[in-house]
Length: 459
Image (tube, rainbow, N blue to C red; front, side):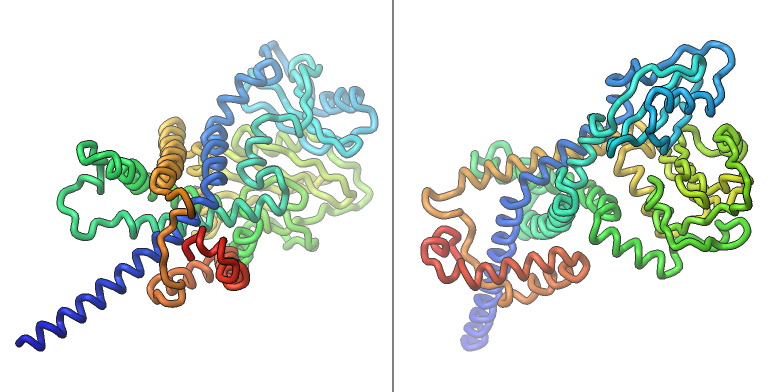
């Protein structure tokens, strides 16, 4: 009996030691991932909060450009484009966007000397009411910061890496939050205000983090399809698996070009890899753009669509719309000579993954369910900001005078459950796997070999 008790005691101690090692390992990775990616998370949350209200903000900022006074018949679109070309001699007209209601100006985008600008036209007078360089549009800058930190491909990869590591943060944070022996819901679902400052600091970080985890995970996963590396590969897999666009979108023969629609126009995610058809060139004169607008109206394209104007002899008019609701998305290719609709790609044509991504994008942008959607997404963003700052404050108060304050833990290879988790995330998100290898190499080559660094990091 005594021997059995002793064996049980040894087994219990070993199990406790393993659990303690796992806890320290997870804490350490959560700690460093948080410190490294916290600034980017805050930036994404702030810019995301602003971008949720893009339409409302632009309606105020550009009211003088957007609003026109309805007064009788409208001037033809062709005449409006001629006026724009007279204002900008030598410029190339690349896009036309009719106003979505009677009191909204039309937009004509032109390219000149490597610069793109939008001219706002009063459809009733046929005159310009103002113009903006596309690089000067504030909300486009916010979107650029949010998507790629205004650093092109490098910025896109950093944002994607931060998004993927946010999933690691949530997984490790959930483990640290998960109640093991605690009785009651204090410190689990609500902060404990009467247990002293140390416990309150912990609760003000852990409890809000738990409440925003589901929403944050949704925002991360719905944002990743836009990313340049993971998103591009994900899109290729979906298209190659047959969940991309179906043959039924083609009206007549399949396209003969090898150009993807995203190369000539801004279109919904599901239509980006749609092959572009060619116009039949038979000595015909291109039809006026007025006819394209007429076709769009006949086909019931959601108001606020854009018409991308062909620049090649065999090019096509491409129509696309980014409506508030995913169900109203549309991409259309029209022969520039005959006016034949060559391809009509709508939400109903999407595969199941395409529909899920379309819904994810409109929910991510806060438009699918209007103000309610915006407020819920705003609450998640503000919760992320609060969680980051309480996490930094928690670390600062716990941090010793010398050292980083991270718990000493065994190497990741010695904690098999956590190693398995990281391998899985590394496979699912390659940039995470690559960054883990880089961290391991830095640890082996520098941290473990430089005593001062090793002491400060408690490695």
